[in-house]
Image 1 (cartoon, rainbow, N blue to C red):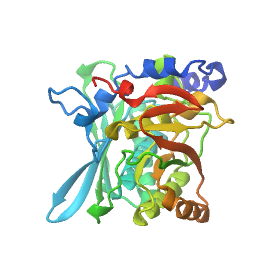
Image 2 (cartoon, helix red, strand yellow):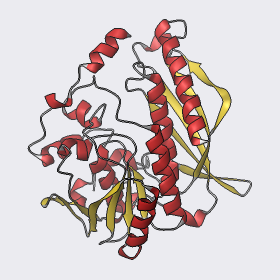
Image 3 (cartoon, one colour):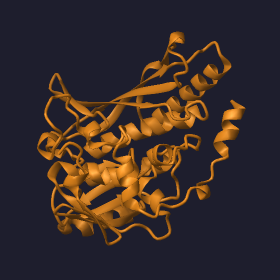
Length: 346
């Protein structure tokens, strides 16, 4: 375990050169199965993937779906985490639960219950005990912070000795209540000209990102930047914005970082985006880093002043990214073409 920790701590972002060509990075990442559009919107049918097939879906890659139980609207989401779980199981578990809760809050639901399952854990081994103890602590701490009930009050285990060197994995399932179906906020961009804001802070962080692992082929790096208190404040702010109907769409920044979150929001309605990156942040961190505690929102011009007033009053960090276009993708005044050429199989 100590060897793993020492190996992870060797990583230094300064050893990674900033990309000279954004298109090279983007199109390299597009073939990553974890990021390709065909992966996120595959309905397991025989039709080609296109904006028509994708539609204005109410969910995206998180697997969030709605169920009707005796007239009560509920949502459920399942998330998994295996990156460096053995190095910091408490933090990894807290990140996973925060990620699931953030998605539900964006959608307009209130998370209520969480359960956890550890796969490929040998509890007879000291490392297995370390992971289990850390995951249990992370589960209990995150549940307390977010006001969640824990199903069965325990983490269940599964170990398959015949599966070979499969990394330890934690899977959590979260259930939430949807009190007002009319107040659902989907992830897809709605209207050309609407403003795009980022709620949260930028940082020079590319730890365990798809960009670092797939493009640079570096698998040993720290877990992404994460602060659970910031998560709570940001999620509370988005809940208020949803209730006041001040946002047209909302997406947690997830796999692939900001760029692929923007792309997933743009594809359904064949819209694009024109954004400006932060001069004080590395461009690869800004576009492809996967630091936690960030939410992408769309705001109409008519509601912008009230939106700004609410977040300013709550003392929650945010900044303007840019605006929605008819279909062109522009970053720092550089055109990367149109969204249709980013759609796999279209």
